[in-house]
Length: 480
Image 1 (cartoon, helix red, strand yellow):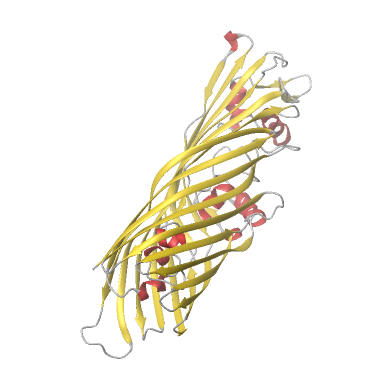
Image 2 (cartoon, one colour; image 1 turned 90 degrees about the horizontal axis):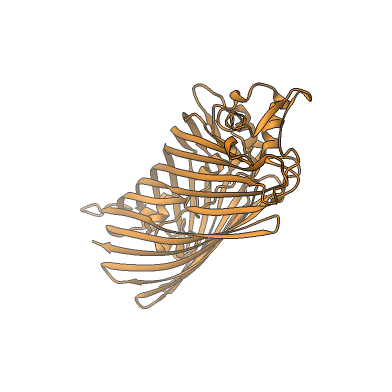
């Protein structure tokens, strides 16, 4: 999936020194296994079928079912649309993305003289896409009960300290005179303590998680297949957002508008170990089991900054303030996974397959040499839950052609009711296969609904965001 990054239960205002939140960790923990058109066309339920390069990301034992060497490459252009509903104001945006689904080689080594039950040993090398972050959305509507400035002033009044202690949001807002200290009331306040402005936010994100995999495995007696994958995932994530409040009705004294522009860039390289087996008790059935270790990212890096602009009824008072630039290295661990798969092979006619994936998102964790992230790690444990993902698919053969269909359900990762976050996919495709060449085409539809809070404040009404992605995957492959 191309997941929209929605900060739903995390605090909108980052701390003075760190930009990382529980929502960031969830973003990098959710995996949607893109890849070859055949794999996606059957819903990604290939853990017990094997002999497909993308299946090696799910169950490495699938490499044992290759009978010869192979190269495959997949392109996956997509369109992601986001429909938002905030205070009954609707907005729709679309983003077109051209991405690579997978590219890989599998090499088969057979013993020169067949002895015993060991049939072959295979090695696979290549890349599979695991998540896509390309998205854009817009939220807007009138809010007559609160302002983001309430968050700033409440934070100062409740926890104390100086505005300069929060240099990425409160400090610039104070320097731009959006908030000020009322010496009579002895507290911080603003020109719109009860809201009344027209609020909007535009968010554009892009990037991906691509995993480079080295897989080794073999075939014992055409009954037991085994495999081991060493994966190196690469995270690239970019976010640019503009939050604004405007006094469209000229009802707020002195104040005309404010803008908060935020930029975040995240990079990380990790490693994961995956092991699996596939057992064929009878010719028409295959049973697959796979375990994925937690993914460790020892060198996560964030780069972020913000700009706050205030416009007043008097042009002479307009003010723009820039935050410092934040740079921080830290450690991240995402959860382990366990996957059980079952496939029924209907002779030379087709197959039906399904699988269940267990993942506990509350096991994710942040850490660094200078900060323990105890508050965020506690939020991860309390906000996210363990559940499962279900994938099913089928493929049928008509001479040299293949017809496929699949579906998947990725469960809601949140413990709090009403947030949503479940993802549904439907897919279908065609394939053409001859001895040394094949090509496959698949269409996949995916949808997620989530709540998005412009900021964290009592009584704040969230925007309901509906993300719909249409992807067309095309794979070409050569056997040799």
